[in-house]
Image 1 (cartoon, rainbow, N blue to C red):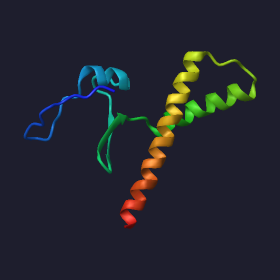
Image 2: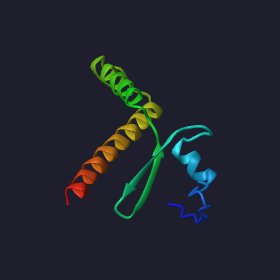
Image 3: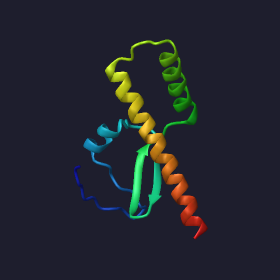
Amino acid sequence: MAVFTRKMDELGRVVVPKELRTNMGVADGDMIEIVGVEDGVLLRKYRPAGEVLALAEELYAALNADKTIEPSVERLIRRQMEGIIQALTLTESDKTLDAN
């Protein structure tokens, strides 16, 4: 994993390196989520719930139809699902932190 150092300006802005934006699949104008985690901040591409639900429905339909899923689509689905699981895990840990 690459590590970058950037200076924050007086308004709290930080430039995310192009390499990271590309790896995240973020383009100019895309929304990102900023999540406070125990030891820092997590940046991730914002995905509206409807987009994630549509992806899950496509996966469900493909599995029920015994269709073959192309490897590239399977990788995309797997990454999306991992992101959902991570988001749910972070949400639960936030609730735990708030309760303490």
